[in-house]
Image (cartoon, rainbow, N blue to C red; front, side, top):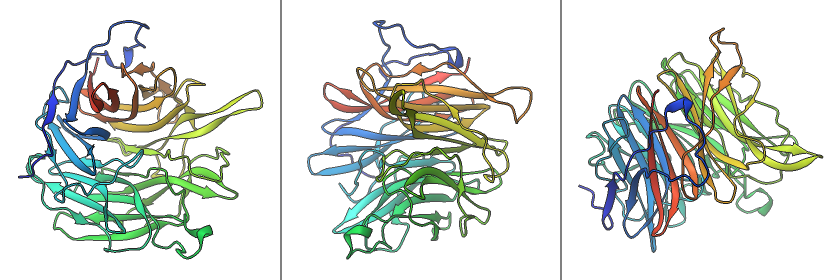
Length: 415
């Protein structure tokens, strides 16, 4: 069994009931109810990811102590109301490398898969570990690409398909000209499938993509695999692109540009898209982009779109956050008839927010209906995550506490 570095806490400090889509923003100064706390004593916890299957919800995150970072996972069997003891995922102690949008990623079904970036010597690797026992123990990790590749790798994402295979996507610098500084930032996007029989293979999805924004991957009920990333269009326009695979990730379509946002930047904003597929096969997408004009300061906003034809076309984008809040780092979940989006936004303190999206009953081509915005966090919070169960939404984020950063989790029951 994997042993944790120090004492691991998965304690319930109280659950906030927000009333789902009818919840409103807390009154300023009103007392805040405490959420669930997930932390590793003696280490700073950050980079949480969530996934759900039925009533089971798994949270994974990184815990950093001086000189070492490890990945942990904890499972709830009651829609996120309580979580079991956290277990270390990485079999090589301290081998994880996390920062910003490079947290560990998780998928759950008949098994639990966790992906993270690892560094061995000068080689950056994408590692995945699987648990067949409800995340109580994890088998030794595998590298889903060839070992000892040149260049950097990171910003991974993970999703499981209906057959139980794990699909992992990441940015990869193996093709960069490492002898020329002007080309050293080149990144391509790769996909690997890790099958239930233990075999794995990789495929190139796209070349010359934005080099430090998170990737996203999702699978549809029929087995289609979708990948999203921030692409570089002429000249230095950083728009979101989606590619699809209908053969289990062996090959991918040409990239489809989701929206022409006009964000021109000679650099990487470190802020990428998120994907989800609902039971009907509709693809839901959320991403940040820069908005503003001559009469107001430029600031990032969060936008939503969807596709009902397998990612071939996308509906016009729709603004999710409130103008002027400096929103960033969105994530999305779809399930049980709900689509929920979370993000963090600047202010006096950074905070985590949630908004639900629903369809007008007039039909699938109607304009999405936006619910009210709910502020999830009482303290400074960044990089939220979201999952959906049949009866609840479960949100999590990294929050700064007196003892350092911790993971906080809230369950939002359906009204």
